[in-house]
Image 1 (tube, rainbow, N blue to C red):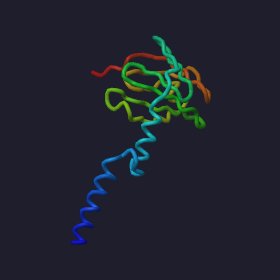
Image 2: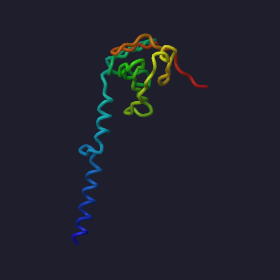
Image 3: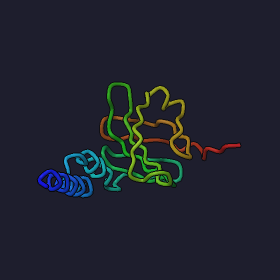
Length: 131
């Protein structure tokens, strides 16, 4: 009888622990990653230019870009594909040289105008089209 009571207690504890992610340590990384997806829209965009301020976002069509800063000769961006999964960031580490030549992020091709650790300026070249 004591063994049955023990099994029932373990079962109910497991159900409560795994069904309540708000208090579980197991889901702590999930909560932290979702908290980092809410950025202010203080960066700007125009017809042919995107200006990104560090740790802020700009939405271009169905993509959200978040400039994370420079690390040596690499530009760090988070790319959110809003149609696919708006809560999931796809980190992009892009060399300055390849950004000058042109990079594709989402449906657009961009070229680097200028970058420092606080501001990234990109020229929108064209809409990327597939055959």
